[in-house]
Image 1: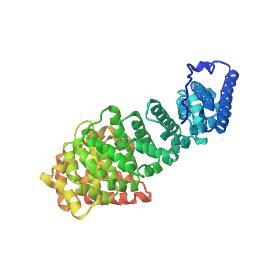
Image 2: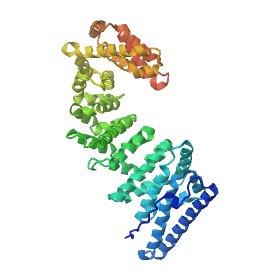
Image 3: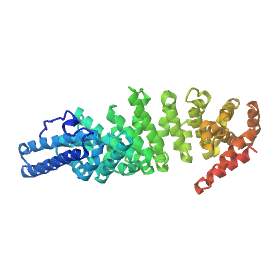
Image 4: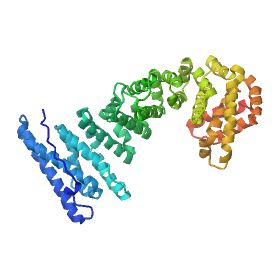
Length: 478
């Protein structure tokens, strides 16, 4: 068993490093002194450990000295202008090497030091210096060494602080170098730690929240991360944690944020087709349909995930229909209101359009019938959304296409698609035309929206099917 180190804390950076206004030459002398002390202490500790491997009492004093050197270096964090000299001296490699030290106290203080050093640099010049340090961390294989440390720390206050600081290092590295996302996600020890950290049976804590935040950052940054995130049981773990909300509400705002981060992870992951299959197997669509009527605060997230998961997938639409999704979605279409109504209307319309587009035979007829039942009340609702979107768009007529999409055009296009799809059943075309007249519109307005959409679809090969689909819709409302 490793001896516990009696810590010697530094009260102030000025005890070790002179104030910033001291001559640079004097400052560098002090940096070199600290670096030299660390190297000497590391070498002495290695020598004594090798000589007295089974007699900890003979090397414990050297570990107290080594720990004190690490704590002394943390005083440099307040002076980023010293980082280049720290890098030049090779001290960064030495510090990162200490992450593998057998003594957990030394490993813990090393993690805290790395976090202190990266958490500085508010001014532009300082940010450049911290970035330089971050790049040195990466060259010294800091992420892999840090990932190997995560399982070493206990659940007491010191252990929790060290884990939190380790995750903070990863976050800082990601913010400065987002291109390392795939490299980090491929570290199996880190990936499993983050996934295990959000498990349902883990009580909510700052660590659980941090794990969810980091996973969300990683999946947003990189497609390779999206592929990896749901592997190794990740989809089940995330859905189980979300599913825990069926019978209760979050106990705090932090827990609420964690659940929202988990939804963001799943939604990002749906841009990879294989992940949709994993979600289907884990019955993720069914879970969303259960949560929708029960949890008002999660409705937008549930609809968004369903929307993303069935996009382009006939099998996903089939699962959605068989799970009773049509009744749930059309019910919400009729009653959605409030500050989230626009976002929810877009998700609802997108789901309906995708189902109408990807299904045929009895499933298509079921979906169309939902729009026809009760004197076409759902089609009336879609028509009203198109009319409102047209009103919302009026002040933005001179804006770029992308800006108009954000101000009502996207909603108008979805409503137009929905109406056109219903009109592929010939008997519905005159009925839709009469409904549009009631809101001062006509089928020509549906065509106009679709024609603008088609004129802005890329000519790339992958957009060909979208173009053909939209052309067919235009023909349906001629």
